[in-house]
Every structure is written in C-alpha cells, then in structure tokens.
Amino acid sequence: MYKVFFKRFLDFSISFLALVLLSPIFIIVLVLLIIYNNGKPFFFQKRPGKNEVFFYIIKFKTMNDKKDKDGNLLPDEERLTNVGLFVRKSSLDEIPQLINVLKGDMSLIGPRPLLPQYLELYDEEQKKRHNVKPGITGWAQINGRNDITWKKKFQLDVWYVNNISFMLDLTIFFKTFTKVFKSEGINKTGSLTTEYFNGNN
Image (cartoon, rainbow, N blue to C red; front, top):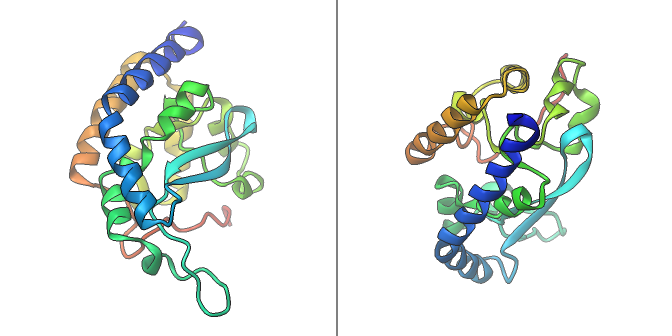
C-alpha cells in the first residue's frame, strides 16, 4: 500500500508545500543565477527514470558556459561561479527537482537519476535501481554520497529498492538534512564533479 499509493501522496504533498515555503529562496537564487549565468538559471538534462523511461531533470545551473579560444568549454573549476559554489554546497541546486516530483518523474526518496550512457554499463543486479522512481535524495546519499565507490553506491541503491518502507523513507528524509547542514559528501575529494562510471571491469 505504501509503495503503490501513500508514497506518491506524500511526494506530491510535501514537494508542493516545500516549493511554497522555499519560494522566497527559490526567487533569490533564480535572480542571482540569471545575473551570474548570463540569463540561464536552470540546467536541464535527460535522465532515465523508473523502468528506464527518460525525463528531463531540472536543477539550478551552478556553472557558466565560458569557452576557450577554440570554442571548448573551460574546465569545471573555471566555470563554477561563487554563487554556484554556494548553491551547490548548500544543495540549493536541488530545489527545482521538486517540480520533477510534482510531475511524477521523481520521488523525494529513491536512487539518484544518473546519466543515460550508464544504462548499458550496469549488470543485472544494478539495473534493479530503475525498478522505482529516482529520488532527490536516497539511501546512498546519506551513506557517503560522492565519497563512496560506484559499486558501493549501486549496492545501496538496490538495497533500498528491496527494502522500501515508510520508516526507511522517513529515516532518509531526516538524515538528509544533517548531511546537507554539514555539507558532507557533496563532491568527491579533490574534484568539483563526480567521477564518471566506466563499468564494472
């Protein structure tokens, strides 16, 4: 009953309320990013959701589009603005994903939606992470986030899929706030972005 009905009800209700309560912060961040990112405050990217059905994830854009003389994007650390760094460290860049939750693309709690090119690299066990809707936060996020290996992250994702319950989601929900407050595991040590998954070999 929880997975079929109550989880979706909570997703919609909480995300709607959160958007209303966070609207002042949303507007402030939106205006700042419009200024710092040359009128481009949002980042849209195609991601696989439940049953590997694609949708477009919405996030605040933390890096500008500056390029070198040859037209190639500059390295991430050179494109990350001061505002973008703050937005990322405080996890404010995740707020627009509440719109994805309202639309039904995502859940508040679930495995994070990753890049489409990873689909062909998963083994059969890892593919189970797509048996449920992806989430804004999840079991892997409160157990290491970007400071754990891909293998461990996928193990945690699949464990969550096999053990979904109201109490588990409630635990993840509240522990997420602790992780955000401490800025734990946001970026893998020594890097601004997460390393790409290159398969299990």
